[in-house]
Structure formats: structure tokens, C-alpha cells
Length: 58
Image (cartoon, rainbow, N blue to C red):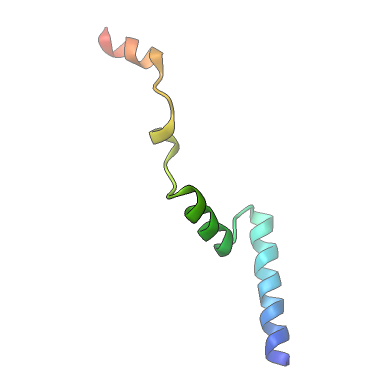
């Protein structure tokens, strides 16, 4: 029984630490990867800037 309480307490402490840091837990990360696919960088998904195209031509 003592081992179960210790494991539960450690799990709660880790969950609180992740929550304070704003990080997702391991189960949430796996669920999101299965649901949405692998992470993409913001640069790869951002729309091209039309001003950037004008600067290259000149």
C-alpha cells in the first residue's frame, strides 16, 4: 500500500509541475500526435509574405 501511495504522490507532484510550466503531459502529447499528426514548425506552415517577394525582385 505504501508503494502505491508513493507512486500516486510522485505522479501528482509531476503533474502539478508540468501544469505550472504550461507543458503537456506525456499522454496528452501522444494523443495530440495521433490526432493531428507530427508537429510542424511555424515557418513551414506560415503564408509567404508578399513584401518579401517584392524585396527579392529589386
